Image (cartoon, rainbow, N blue to C red; front, side):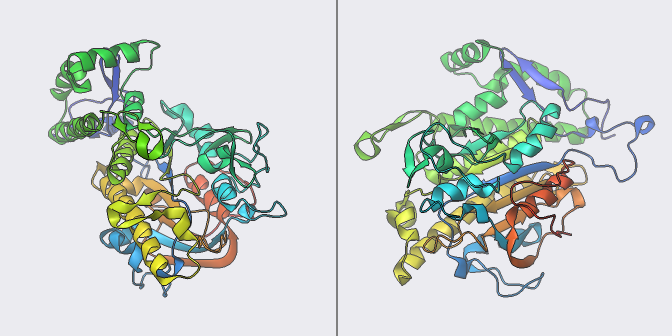
Length: 449
């Protein structure tokens, strides 16, 4: 017998200052007497956007063949084991990132317009304005079903004021999610802070108190919910017991990884500031840890919408750990220098390796008759095509997941160059049950089936 009683998706393991949501379990499916209609989804769909700055080396990104019979280009080779789980979309354009009479500032416009399809007002004052982003259109409709309407993640903090790009506010080059035309949603870059949000009950004062007690006594969140977990386990079927154990093990692994990064790293001699406790010194580990937290948030239905910005637009981060000591932004202005091309390719491939890790984690988690990845729609891309040209047409875009059976991945789909990127978002929102007739510069939905 695979399950012994019914539980809801709102059931949580509770302890002092702790509320751990559960992953999808067979016990959450309706009984025979309450059976859902044939073909009804076994769980919710999730939507995520994964952003990289400064464009990519398009020559080693774009396949030569269309359809399913294509060879993965060099940059995308780390996704070889997941080729049937994503599609490459070429020809999509974000024209509102172009100057359109506003002069320089392509990096700020690239990120600000990526999910909005709107022209950012050129200002570095308080009168910022762009538009509502696709993730927030979804969050506005779906947020009532989850603890958090959306989850904004990143690896750079980013300033929210000041002049960061040719007269454009730092808010434009730091934020991808916009709740309104004038209200960006600041991303969280500290894994510990995200962890505390996901696994505390949110009551004022209790979160800090519980965290202090855990740290004082060197306790895990799992220690606070252990009794509740044991009571639940005795009432679950064998498959659900295994899923619960795997989930708790994943939470504990993340705790240990955060603990390993919890000692502040003093980099004042290099960058003028110290990295807060909880942020790994290793950039790859930082990305993976934030990705794992997104996976847990989706797995437990804490949220169904998330954004993840690997680095702020225009980032000049060094990648010395992959033998590219120069700054990313500086290299993106390659001037067709062959040596710089090779280094940009290394950076682009490193980013794809991290994306492959995230997709692999989602695919490893069973949900319903498939995997968690099967119930996702995940867009990977940049608001700049070639970093040297600063173009915003024919953008590098991947679409991963099966959208609960509404998507057919594993293809290279070539659209007419100039097709609005927002047409893709309209199509994804429709699959999320959030129909929208228009957003930004959209002209209609695109074919993804």
